[in-house]
Image (cartoon, rainbow, N blue to C red; front, side):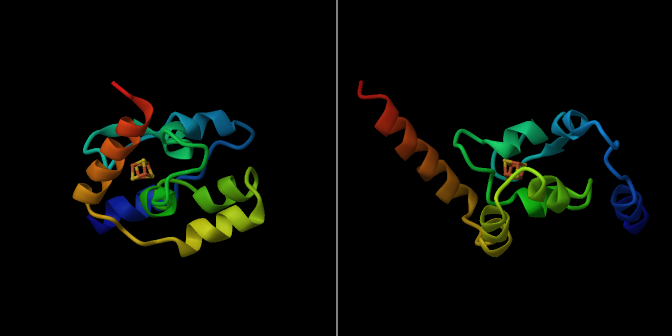
Length: 104
Ligand code: SF4
C-alpha cells in the first residue's frame, strides 16, 4: 500500500499539457463514484470543491496547478477550508440546491 502511494506521488503532470490532468479520474468520497479532475474544478458551482487538495495531492501537484489558475486568496481559502461535512450533509445540500432551482 505504501509503495502505491509513493508511486502516485512521484507521478508529475505532463509538462505543457494541463488538459491532461483535467481528464484524470478518482473516486469521489462525496458522490461515491468516479469523477474526472475537471469536475472537481467546478462541481456544479463556479469554485473548486473544498476537498480538491485532499483528493488530488497524491496524484499530481494540484497546489501548483491551482496556483497557476486561481487568485492566491482562493487557493489559500481552499487550504484553510478543510472542514468535512459528512455524506448526509452533502445530500441535504444537494437537495436544497435542487429545491431552489426546480420550483415544480
Ligand atoms: S475534490 Fe470534491 S468532487 Fe472531486 S473527488 Fe474530491 S470530493 Fe469529489
